[in-house]
Image (tube, rainbow, N blue to C red; front, top):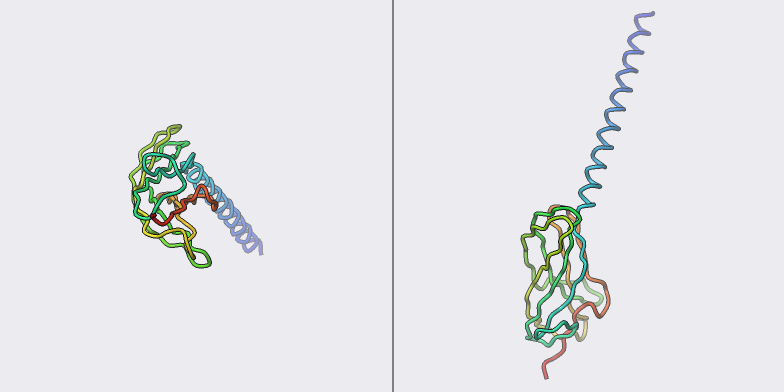
Length: 159
């Protein structure tokens, strides 16, 4: 009878150790994940340059520069996917231009990501305009330009 009791105590001790190890592993994984998310560069500014000037309005067929200023809290070395997307009312938004930009920025520094494109459609009908989306490949997070005009780009018909 005492042999059975010792075996139960031994099994209980092993189960307690397994639970403690599992808690430590989960805590470590959560800590690692939160550290990775904390190192996501933040977008400090985003704007459009049309004909050499900052402007939230362009004309169909006119070259537009999209600028995204990001700041890294910690060193960030990876690719960033920058998308120029069409803001379509009542339908899913669509990608218009996609660029992969290698980024190597030290902690506390900023960098200017630039994408040049030419809008092919005016902001009429279902197309409200264009906006920027930034995806951080390594961290599986993204940033989307505010849903307002400005900062999103309106495109007019050429006169």
